[in-house]
Image (cartoon, rainbow, N blue to C red; front, side, top):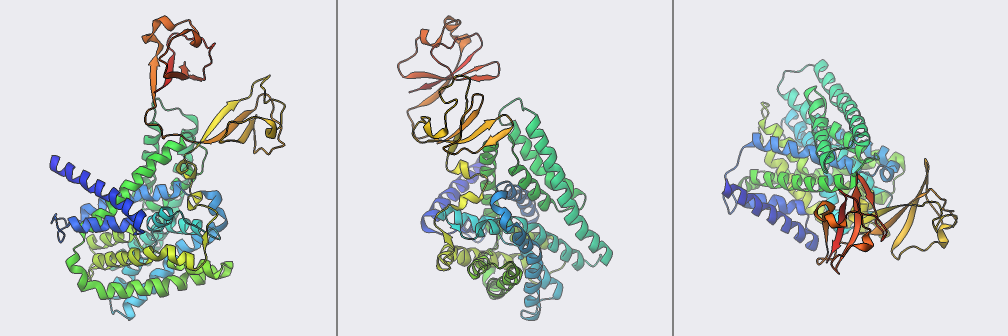
Length: 531
């Protein structure tokens, strides 16, 4: 066991180091994770024997739940709304058409069996959000015409449709289905997945808004459980669990719930870990020695998919919406294949359905080529097409934008007689680096301008950049019961170290910002800034 844990720790550290290198040299990080898996695998330097497809499918399926959920959770619906219709069209009809065209190519050109051809088309019909946005985020590139949001919605929502097509083709290949059963399978996949996604999200939002958890972090555990429920309940009833998880993530991520910052940070870390696990495990499962045998058909499929099938589908579906030529070309090039395609290929491998060709390694090679060439050239293509929006950051399209910029909000109540009361915003004195962004007045929310008058009873919300670059400063929590001599005195009457300051007091569940005349009471908890 210690050896296994040591190996896991070393692998994670190497993957994190690879992520840093990818940002420096522009190589997609997910490609490096996959390469490390191949390096440690049976054909690599470390010769770790691993060919358990059943175990890999279970682990990767669990990882995909969190990736799908957080893909929805991080989607900023306000930014995505203008292109949501086009994105959903690409993620549904686009997946079906891509699968059909690719399947026909495999059948007529490569001479694969018909259902096996359609299976390969279904497996690789979806695009991968992680592959696209790991590149855009690392380069801090935003795209014109809401193209980043278009790709985000499409890539986040097309995996469920690819999964559904894969299940349908595998069912047909086993020869135990009828037209009625296939029709019901399509109905249950879409309808149950959508309904349970909405119902579970609404219930979770109700709980998060109305219930207070007894300990810090319990709400994070609750949302983690919700993500799992959003997949398992519809899946048990024949619905599409990935579609449900994505819808649940979108609704919770765009709702006003408590402690969203901590949820973003938690799921950001979890999703990053899941991506490392998936791509490393898939690399570990692959046998590089077999790739030369399937390289030609895989290369042919990859070229057809990237240069013919994907552009034909994108141009056909986006033409009625009057998308610009640059947007259609960039969306065509951005159709990177990723982890979900390989996971669905594993499902095909462990299925009782017979396949003549090595579907797993064919799809693995296609994904490898897609990330290597399309992914590496994506920033260059965006610049050549003049689709880069230099005025904004791609992170604006995500719900976690403010956390990535380390922007914090400060709440301040304006009591009767306050020096700001009765004055316009432009005449009040704010500390440097802060901005008054919202005024809460009863049930009304006001976005202020310089002319907006501040009234007594208002709650002012100010924004400021977070400060965390002070290694010699720390926070110290002190219970007054440990200092009985302080009870009944004011803060100005007690003696602290010259390098300490009381910045916060907690009293009976309330938070108090102290002044010199603040009276200290028994059971108070004081938070000190200490040098």
